[in-house]
Image (cartoon, one colour):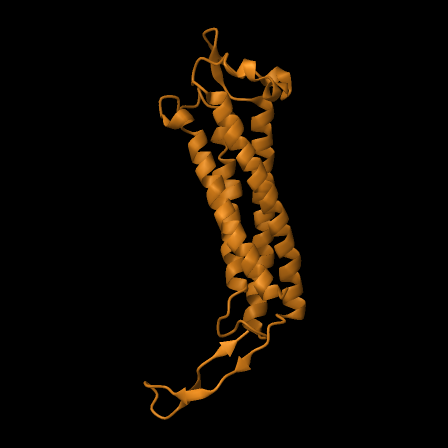
Length: 214
């Protein structure tokens, strides 16, 4: 696969993943879709660190857009300085994306291991913190949380989604790092073929190419 096509594929994959992370983080702030418990004392620290919104979201969205642009077919898209410059920008933005995805993965993994803050026996605490993540396999413990209702399954589902998405983001950003580096040094393997020419209606008798295929 050419570096340009690979960049476009990676970028178009990173953009929806980043949006998934932002939506998942937003849902973590509203257990069961309600704002009754949206405050510092009722939600875990891992939720407020905004790893999905900032790390797996915005910090990956920018590399995704940069990768799409690097793989574009603009006037400087093939075999020229413009394409190599976009690939160079994509290298730095992909490295930035790797950091964001790792941040999201680390915080989300901690959120799964520690568990949510919930009300049990009249106390708001991290009641599953000492289980070292074993509560994930014991669903009977999940029902012990009185408030927010169903918060354990809510957190487990969304943090698991963030872990999966951020793992994919790390892989894709890593691929784009290598791909963009090759694009800077080797260029894009897509070749330009000029098709037949026809007079441009706004330029009088000047002939302009009607097709560029890559």
